[in-house]
Length: 488
Image (cartoon, rainbow, N blue to C red; front, side, top):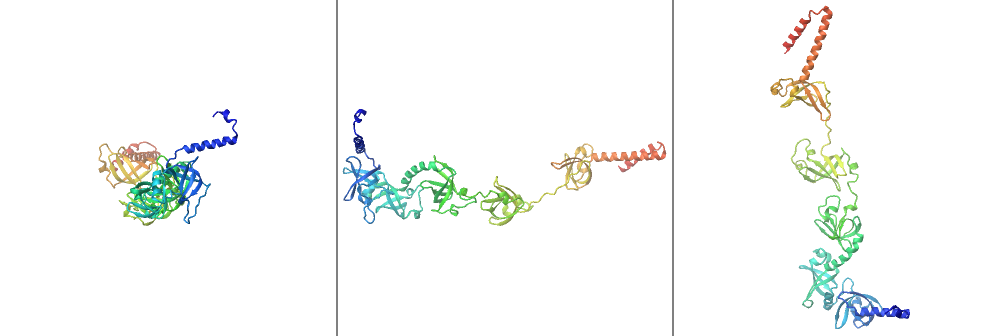
């Protein structure tokens, strides 16, 4: 129809034409089983409710779907309702309403729901071999364990007496073999909700959740239609052996999302992230050299772990367990569960480590290093190919290199300097960083000769002064040489 033809049509007539055109389209539209429609109730007759499907097309719904337990009809002519198309039977379009599943009341209703691929409402009556017996409008049906929820629930007590929507997987032997699946309904709902949750469930979000299952590796929670997992390591700051030590099925909690992998449909949450990190301020609570109490939680070949508070463990290294004696394993000193008093060596919050000891920290005795040129008495500690180690009275050990022993090349130093023999040396070098001291016996001998020479010169000067001449110089020199020979 062209614009010039419609210009002369009154507005009221144009609207009527549009309505008629829409109704004509609706009348010719072919409904698909399971398709949802909104329609008006045009009449109620007998046990059927008639609804307008557009044009002269009508559909029917069983009046029993709008009748409560007291027999009161809850629908009237003119009401707008939502319904699902089931099938065409004897030329009549049959529909049904849905409230938590198609309220099936007969085998025919269940067959219709099976053919239209719409859910039915069923009550879980009892646990049987392989699954559950479910009553659908009084009709006995079967739901396998694997189809009762998204994980395949075997906790029968959780479902007994509860009513859920189920999809009819099989309708065989005229209704004598009916197999249901709640999981198929949940999967469909889950796909819809995942799209909604993608907009709201983000990393770092704090969300309410219901604990639905406890496993060795953690706890599954329901976030309102989709599942999330709290790993056992995220249940608490302290070590948790079993998820049941912290949570119980049905418990309402608030958790924080730590990752959301929508490609794998995996949401990971944390309960401990809702609590303050116990390592915050740990250095202030456990200062170095402080004495604290704790309990041994576990032993390893390298040490013993001590629980100081919830979420805080420290390590007593094996070297700090034996009080100076060598031990092969911590079990020689402590046992798991034993209460101990320990000393804090260091607390590092960033590394989440606390070093402990069974004994207080002992500061090593500070040894004063000798000065260069000092003459020291000592004892030969040991002789090595490169020199002689001398232990001094201060406790330090110094080295007399071969070149500083004052002996001829090829001399057997072990015979000249037997271990334990007394020796006098002079300090020639001191490394203040490493504490190494270099000694010399040769330099001490040279210093001794120099001293003797000075003493000799002083004696000569005194003699000359008293005698007034040099005649006695040769005699004095000869006497001094004889004295050295005798002493050698």
